[in-house]
Length: 118
Image (cartoon, rainbow, N blue to C red; front, side):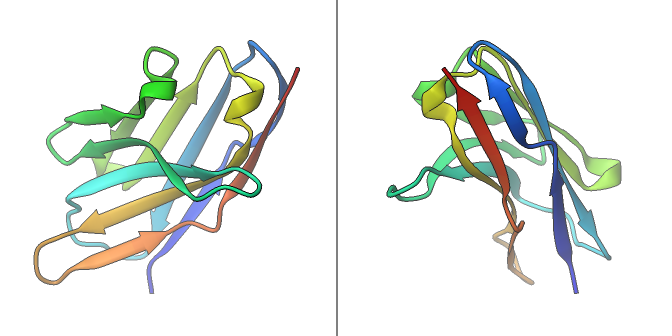
């Protein structure tokens, strides 16, 4: 059974930085993409950033220029470096590993809280 274990969340002042990590435990086949999503109170979960196995990245407009997604494929780990944090970045951040080819999978982490104070 594959589990995604997240770490790095916390409380930070506006303008500060945090680095999230998400590692897959157990054996996992090569992924199609890894990504980070977030959910603010009372809002739907939204995409923050994704990275493909080939290194292509995609970001939500709201985080472009401030957040950087990266991965260590040898360790099945994905990172999210968050700089210049804003109060509107507050939410629960979830990592996701996805494979669209057979055998497919779609794994989610348990979520880590990020709180940015003004």
